[in-house]
Structure formats: structure tokens, C-alpha cells
Length: 161
Ligand SMILES: [Zn+2]
Image (cartoon, rainbow, N blue to C red):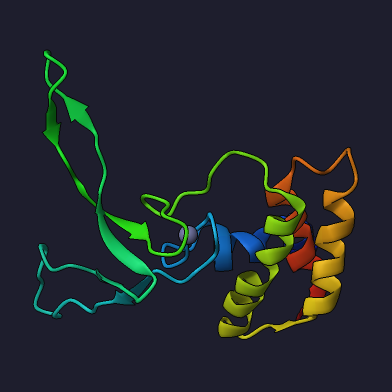
């Protein structure tokens, strides 16, 4: 049994901390890593409450209410503008990451908000080494277009515990 548990622990992906705190966190913009929402877990009444919400999403100062253009009618006219949280810092609609590769300066500049989010989550961060890691990898041709992987590995290498 313990052998099974050990092998499962070894399969924990190396980017798990990055994904949990930054990439898949609904509170954080995946494009610039600013905190745009606060998600509060609600506790439905014990007597039931099938329609009771389990989460409340509040926008923070960095989150703005935006509109996402989604559907058009058969004449091409717009039909709906669903409300979405838009990042007040970078303008990302729905707080999604841009797919374009970042410049060296932009990538190094994201170390600060990344470190801020990690410290909020209770981790100690070596910002200086994290900046150096990002700078070195962005200057390396084989890695320069893999921003997400560069950030994930930096998070893995330079945060404690
Ligand atoms: Zn953003």
C-alpha cells in the first residue's frame, strides 16, 4: 500500500504549485498575474438548498466588469454581450492568457506579481533568483517561446516550502 502511495506522490506534476496558485486560480489573471477576483466558498443551509450558490465571486480593484462579444445573428449583428471579468491591468477578457510569446522585459516584469501571489498563498519566494532564472531562459533560444513553462519552473525552483 505504501509503495502505491509513494508512486502516486512521484507523479505530482512539477508545475502543480504554479497551476494552483496562478494559472488555474479563478481569482488571478493568467495574463499578468494580478488578483482580479475574490472567490468565497459559501455553505448552503443544512436543510437542503439545491439552488443555493456554493461560491460568490467578487471583483477586486484590478478586476473590472467587461463584456465579451460572443454571438451574432445570421445577418452578422451582435446578439449577446455576456458579462465577464476583465483585467483592469492588462485588459484580458475573462482573465485568460495571451498566446503570444512575451518580450524579455515583459517576462521579467511578471516575476513581481507572480511572487506577490505566491507570498499571499503562504510561500516564501526568492525574487532575485526567480528574475535571474526567467532572464536566462528568455535569452536561451530553445526556451524563449515557452513562457508558461519558464514561469512554472521558476515557481518550482525558487519557492518554499
Ligand atoms: Zn491581467
